[in-house]
Image (cartoon, rainbow, N blue to C red):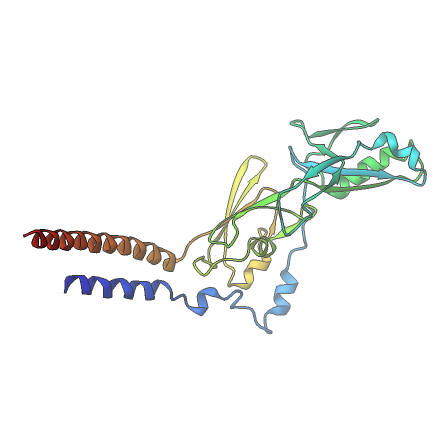
Length: 266
């Protein structure tokens, strides 16, 4: 009788932990036709990412005379990137690493301080210097190793490269396969290293205020953490109870077998 009650209790807990309300799984519950205009009016512009120490930058110089720009370009190398839904897995890149002083060593031009500058500012800086030496130079630049890390209750936790240094929170979660049914959508944690100062923000994906948050647009090296909900905690408790019950049944079965063996030997 005791064993039967224990089994019924376990089944009840399993049913409870498997039930997650539709409300808990729904994004942007507060968005409606009435507040769409207000959201658009207060929506922050997509920020241009700034360059930081240890960033890897792909910089290419072209001009009408291809031979004139050869000295200003690094030799191409093969660079394999981690598997990602955002960028290709491999390609041939020319890249510069921002050193501890915030500089890159550019051919002919020498050391250029780029730490804290945006992509467009770096392009203008290099292009301005090149115009004094070659005719009509064109400079392109993008980030190579800018990434965000998504942890916790998502389908595919891991690090994901940013597309040219820009990614929204929703895009990052989408790349990670979305939040599982056991993840909290109302309390997503963003961890940001703002030049040595750690910043923490918690965002509610069910509210329209998400789009107006300065953390909606992620920056390189941001960490996104999705916490487990109560259903996950209940599920873990049920697993522990299940293992305990299995151990009890196994012990009981061992005793029964032993008794039957002794009786048979007599």
